[in-house]
Length: 96
Image (cartoon, rainbow, N blue to C red):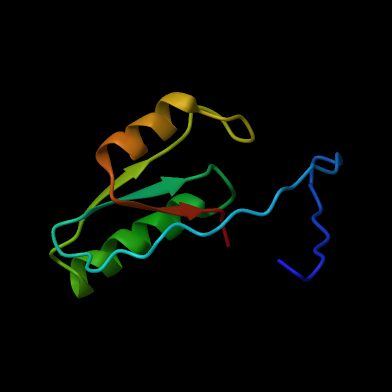
């Protein structure tokens, strides 16, 4: 990343951020499992419900599963492990 970014943390502590590459694209989503991760932000549950409805209407060959971490702002290794072991992709819902 040649461009410099400024990241603001609403908790008030500036995080140390290291750039990472995006995950590779799937060739097709048919037959894949996509986790819809409700990150416990305001309205993120409603957003994930709408996302699930969209997948049902537009990509019925994709299996979706909604999941939540145990608490907001805290890493949930068990949830991450479940998504990594069982999912093909994930969408993180951070609210509207």
